[in-house]
Every structure is written in C-alpha cells, then in structure tokens.
Length: 452
Image (tube, rainbow, N blue to C red):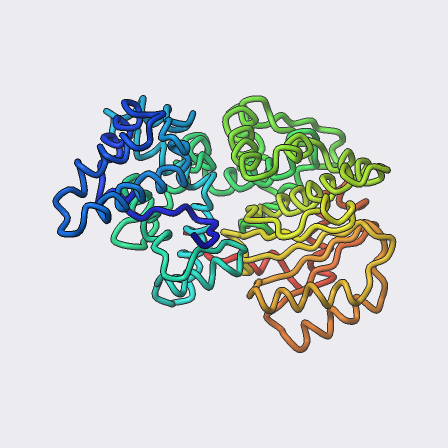
C-alpha cells in the first residue's frame, strides 16, 4: 500500500458500517482477527454481488481502516483509544465527537480542514486532486486515487465539523479541537477589546508581567483591534481585573500599569491551549514549550546538539505564538541538523498572510545562500510569508537580498530577525512588531484580515 500521512479508510466509513457495531465486534473477537473479519463480512458485505473472496477483502479493508485510525491493533484488539470509543458506543454524539477530536489532533485532520478553508478562500472548488496538491505543499500526502480525505470528512461531518459537503462549522471545529472550547466559554461574552487584549497577553505565556501598552500594541498588530489609549484602563484593564483574569500593578503615574495573567485565565484558557499545542509536537519538545524565551535562548548555548535542536524548534514556536500563529508542521528539525536549523510551517486566522514558513537557525552568521534556499522553497510551497530567524548575525548582504526579493515578488514578504532582535524581544515582546515591519515592510497593524 502506498505511503500515506492520512489514514486509510476504504470500507471504514459511516456510510458503510456502524461504528458502535464494529467496536462491539472488536470487543468480542479481539485477538482473533479472522473471526473479527468474518463478523464484519457477514454483517456488511455478505449481500454484495461479488465473490466470497472479494467480500473477505472488503471486510479486511474495514479492519485496516480501523487500524489506520488507531482503534484496533493487528489482531483486532481494541487499542487504548478504541477502548475509550467502546465505552461511548451507546452515546452516539459523544462517540462521534471523540473520534473527530482524535482525527483533528492526531491524524492531520486540522491540516485537512485548514487546506479546505484556504482553497475555498481562494475561490477554488474543493476536489480530491486539489486537496492532494495543497496537502503535499504542507508535507501531508495520500495515494493518488485514494479517498482518504473524503472518508475523513464523513467522520468529521458526523461530529458537525463539516456541513453541506466541505463547508466548515468554525464553532464545532474549535470546540472539538480543544483549542477554543474553554476559550469560547470563558471569553465569548467579553467585549472584543477585552478579549483580544487577553489573548495577546496569553500569547506571551504566563511567566511574566508586561506593561499594558505593550499588550495593547500586540493586540492591535495581531488582531486589528483598535484601542482608545486614554480609555484603556477603564474599558479594558479594570474590567479584566475585576473579572479575575489579570492582576495590575501601578509603578508610577507616568508609566502604564504592569499586567500579569491571573490564575483563573491560566487554568481556564492558557493551559487548555498549551495542552493542545503539546499534542502536536514531539514528546521531547513539550517541556521546552513551557519555558520562557530567556530559558530557551540559554538552552541554545548548550554543548549538546540534541538539546540545541529542541531549543531551536521551541524558539520558533515561542516567537510565532507572540503573533498568534498556529503550528502546522515541522519539515526539518534542529535535532536532525546538529541543532543548527529548523524549518517549520505556521498558519494565521487573522493576518492577511495566512501560511508562514519559518526558518530558525543557530549560526554565528546567516548567509545569502541560506536565505535564497528558503525563498525558493517558499515559492514552490506557495507560502504567504517567510520569517528567517537567526540567533547570530544577519549581515547587510542578506538584508539587501530580502529587499530585492520583495521588490521582485511583492506578495512574498521576507522578515529577518537576528540575535539583537531576540534580545530586544526578550525584554519587550511587542518589539517583534518592529522587527517584522522593519525587515519585511510587513506592517502587522494593516495585515490582518476581517474576522469571522
């Protein structure tokens, strides 16, 4: 069977089998895959006008599909996830929601959904051929002629993620991913100015305190939210403090209040968001995602190349989280390059540039060849924007090259962030707006797209 990043699903489809029924078959016959397949064949394929051998192949496909979705093992035993589904077999709504969440978080379902949304935003009809091309650009492949995305869509449709074919229900998507279910409950009732201020604060993590004007600036740059500077305290800060989402500390009358995320918003919003992000990454990287930017930069000076590689990837995550970019995939990990290079992809719901390609390097000096390779790859992959981050120096030759690229290809902004920028961003996270704007002519305050 050709390699596929999407799970095989032929004959494992809600239009062909009952999920609760095949779960019961696995519970009854787990450990004896032949008996399991026989039961499936008799239940669903015995009436097919074909040979008994082919009916057996159809039943085998059902088994292979359940394996690909992580529900059973080679011998038809229920996996840990399969046991969770079995416990929900009589609660169809919860059953389909559990499978949909698994698909979105663990089987590239979120990437499939984002591809569909991007294709539709471009005005192109969604077909399997178009999906194959767009998914390949994000490093997710499925065999030519395969129906993998269609079957995945049918399962997600059972949970309400897709309606009327390929149309996405954003609220169901967010709730099932666990990305926004708590966020919807906690933040949905807040005025937009307060909600986006709080989101901008949480994008920085929870280990620091920041001047309120820095958070205000990030909220404007990332989400396009405009604030009344003189009314910020009355309209945003004091209501959030009263609701228990932030704490405020006034230093002097001349300086803005310092804002810290309170325990309530950390537990109700930040922790669920972080857990969702951790599920998308390799296990070794997860502890680093909870570290501060200074701690990650310290790890990058380690003599252990494996440690440096993980820290480099964590650095890309931290910086892109500041402007609320969502992780998609890592093409090249720092652990595979001796801690010297990470190539990752992120997406934005808010900025005009939706697909971001991020090269993160740990070199004393970035070369023009490094930048040229990334730009060439971005054009091939149809990335909307390129961010090149180097912990060391970026010289004038690289900056001149980036400006030339933007002059010749105005729709591909190239942002450059060097070691000095990192030091500044560590002290003042809002400085990332200056770094992106200075290097790429990308003015974030004007780059957001209308919110849904």
